Amino acid sequence: MENSSNNRRNFIKKAVMGGFMAVSIPEILSASMVPSAMRKNSLTKDNIILFQGDSITDSGRNRDDNSFNNAGALGSGYPMLAGAALIEKYASLNLKVYNKGVSGNKVYQLAERWDSDCLDIKPDILSILIGVNDIWHKLNGQYNGTVEIYRHDYIALLERTKKALPNVKLIICEPFAVPGVKAVDDKWYPEFYGYQKAAMEIAAQFKATFIPYQRIYNEAITRAPGVYWTGDGVHPTLAGAQLMAQAWVEAVKA
Amino acid sequence: MENSSNNRRNFIKKAVMGGFMAVSIPEILSASMVPSAMRKNSLTKDNIILFQGDSITDSGRNRDDNSFNNAGALGSGYPMLAGAALIEKYASLNLKVYNKGVSGNKVYQLAERWDSDCLDIKPDILSILIGVNDIWHKLNGQYNGTVEIYRHDYIALLERTKKALPNVKLIICEPFAVPGVKAVDDKWYPEFYGYQKAAMEIAAQFKATFIPYQRIYNEAITRAPGVYWTGDGVHPTLAGAQLMAQAWVEAVKA
Image (cartoon, rainbow over all chains, first blue to last red; front, side, top):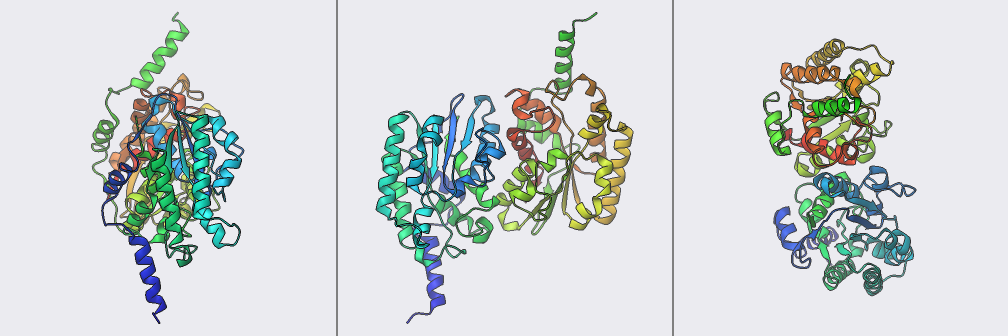
């Protein structure tokens, strides 16, 4: 019988290192966004950028505020930090940055509010980060999902989106977790890898830019402990949100 | 008798261009922070960074939250955006970033709360942005200040600070306004230039880094209209706050 603390160490090591080589953030970004991702998305004048997802995207935004480009409407997470960077860097483009993430959402819940919270906004660039609740709520006993349901629902959502908005540019963000921090224990694995793989394959299928957030967090925890980047293994701290925002900004260009 | 619309145009042109040549932001930053500023401030492990000032610094922070490195305690302005960038970039240094700006403050009001809101925190790097209310509240009839009172009070505050914290590194931020936007009319000038000159001279006297925010805003309004960067001429939008945060981050190095 193996020692359980050894098991835990091995689990963390394996989960963190899975496929990951020690390289710098710029190397990670340039290497990983290009292959599955094709290219940076070109921004043009008056473009509308929409962030969609769950609590990580929601990040305490004021849901009664339907405006754009301000901290109240954008929350205090990566959409606000990326939005701030974008509207400063590309000031002459007059971008409009919206956030419609809703805490607790799984893919089918995005679908339920997709007309008003996505299609009606007519984004030119649509960013989606979804998946962590699909497994987390299952582990909590609140939801009966599988990777196949996630994949099926996600593809249906994107097909519906491309039909309504044929020219929309898609950015698919990899769902991520930091193993060993609070909520994220070994019950997540290997199943969670399936969700991450599905997200990457869906990005390829839809020629979307794929942002490899798991690899970005894996690199980050070589610089500071996991709790520095996420308090519970899932929700980013301000430092984690900045990490994500920087990677996101690299997915577009003027 | 001159045409009043011509007067206004001339005023705006003069106010905006005063001493300003069309150069890029990196040129502005490198050229202007070095002379009055000496150098970038070195950050070391476990450093405490404190942002102090008025509403521009306060930026809606939760004043009951005495913690650091999170959006609630840091607000939604340049201290939060600079803080996010700093704690991501220098993750291994374990920085603590605080914001204790209070809306409406003039220099003497910083002095009134300086023990608890600065000296007790023992910052390694202290950033101060103050001055716009010293003139604004005077124009409103709420305050009887002058440039000389501002200069005298500011010097006294910094002498007190250096006495209590001899090794503190000071960053003095230039008070700024965007002429022609809402609150900022020709009654501000030329008096407001006196406050800006005083801030720069005080920075030199105390060997502080000086961040030339007026020049940074002057450059920004060549990229997008004044209201894009500040809604009322004084308070930054999210884009304006990002502009300020980026400049601030340039004032330190590892």
